[in-house]
Length: 344
Image (cartoon, rainbow, N blue to C red; front, side, top):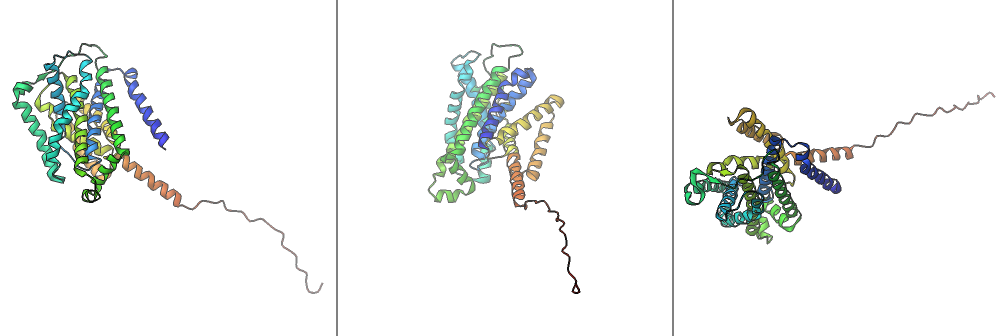
């Protein structure tokens, strides 16, 4: 089974790399790019919300931080459009992670619903700062980013492959965490934090590390998005719908799993893009989010991947418990012995 999983992951990667070759339509690549962006965000959020159980509804604040960080770096160092901004993505991720450290120290002193409320406040505080610090961010007038020089049908290709590279890196980090002592500590915190603390696990350090890693990848996704749209505004960079989307994608695919967030992004984001292109921004995507939340809570509370795994395990258990079916043997006709009469 492990070999099959690795083979399947490699096959999916080959398909993702070859997608622009088989379907190079600009609209299709644009939808694929946005799907990769949300897959990065959901994978990063899953490190915190899925592994440690701390549900953050404000991590999209780091999406905006990453977007503005790339714009400010490009303006301050007069970086031209082209491939140079892509090489700044690790720098943007590190800066976003550094900013996330003091925020994580403050918010992670709380738990459950208090932590959720603080993270929501974190998102709107970031939006207000981006609006009011007009000297640095441009305020409500927005911030311009470098315009890339490439044109034509292949305009989206560099963005697509850059997003795919970041997603692969996020998945590798998530897989390493899942297999390491770090991941076991996060799962212990999710199951029972007080007991994990009593067993000597430094819960505060592990939670902070997960918080910062989630911010790092979400910030890189925000930088990619900002360079793609080339002009950003506070209300769009710090959009609460981004939070709803990445949390919904994680829960839909399977929160706490490796491939669940990616599966959720692949299923939800193209549908959202289709509704937007077909009906415009009239709120149908919000109806989709609400309906999916109800379906997941009622039918698949664990997500698609854990739900399918549970069904398969039940099937295997039932199959093994059934007695083996044996063929019924037909009786063989034997000659009946003759009895001698007493007179003979």
